[in-house]
Image: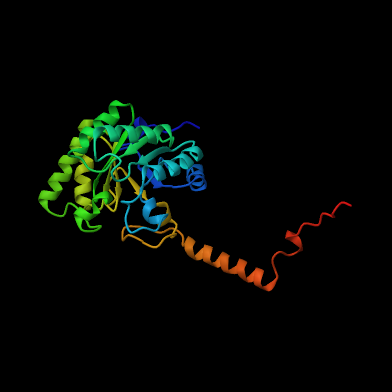
Length: 270
């Protein structure tokens, strides 16, 4: 089974929709990869919310991201694995950006990294690319700037904001990223950006006309506390797990488990 590389993701633009999902552990990544239909697995800093139970992503550390990335990378044979650079792992300096991106590849085993924003981030992206590490961009609602935005709100609602995001997308294209996540922007803006650049766009809450889509693993499975309005849940795993745990507890309390079927019958040797 051949590993997907960034050049293949670029070549899919306009030909085939790109499917991307998050994962944070070995078994989840193994299940996702076994479908042979998921092109990209993102080890997202969203783990701060869906795994750690926090209200935002801002306290996730590089050590935590590398820990989760290593598990996901070890399980993944086909999909491109991307490490999501956490808050303050690249904002402070070009040097820290390159060092931390390198740690993602060397210690976490990822194939590429993702950074939020443009502007001053462009220099850091360029330096990471110069180090031989592929980069995915991220525009629109960038969760690491949630305090600046005043919450998780739709971005690009005014002409000025839309023009800025389109400009940033072109800047990211020019600097050399292989794709851009567009999060929580109006569908018409996402369509315009998608048609204006030569690299793929991957939407999350950005309508159907991006080159691909990404969702959080736990959101797809109905396995978490928070469900954004744009999420389609494909199964209520929380309900299924709760039912199984209740049945197990009842079996233990009533003595039905372990039954003879699950009880060792080996005689003790004298």
